[in-house]
Image 1: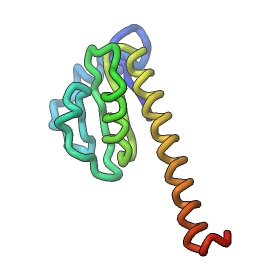
Image 2: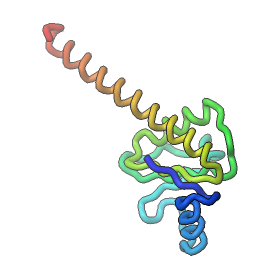
Image 3: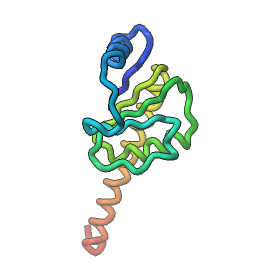
Image 4: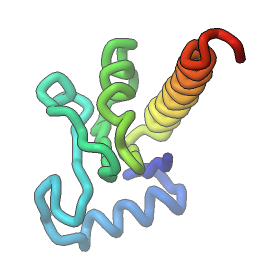
Length: 125
């Protein structure tokens, strides 16, 4: 998981501004990157497994829990998630939430596999 700042004096912000100024315009799925805007998550379709996702936060500074949950649910099958926006604190908040959600999901899947293996052996293991 990575994040990019579009503003400020940080090297990442300056690089992002430069890249945005010189990058060719392209649609959301060209080059295998699916672009999502945080305000359009309710309209977003399911993300295929293994796709790179770029989430644009825009000028948003805070997000409600349902938006973060929806984003985590949508990006779970993604191979790589990049978060970009104008506010570095908002970016950090979203990245941390996605990291925690991914860790919880992986732990739940591991527990489920262990449970199914135990009961698949007739409860002997």
